[in-house]
Length: 82
Image (cartoon, rainbow, N blue to C red; front, side, top):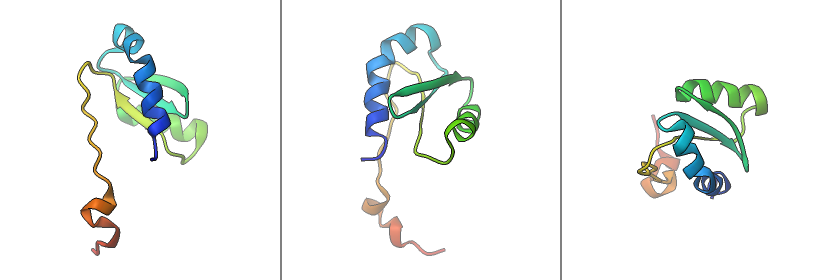
């Protein structure tokens, strides 16, 4: 699944991130932390500048996980029409 490697890497460094960057946003591509940011827009801009339009994880550093996965295929959105 897309971003599985990034999510696993985030979990492996989460304790350290919580100590130093709680409530900030981590930018991870592959198994590399590219930075910590005050807002997701800054993280996204940096990700595009450094790596281009590739899958990237921008995740807020919080004690409780707020990640929700809802694949578009499960919702039938792959065939949605505007």
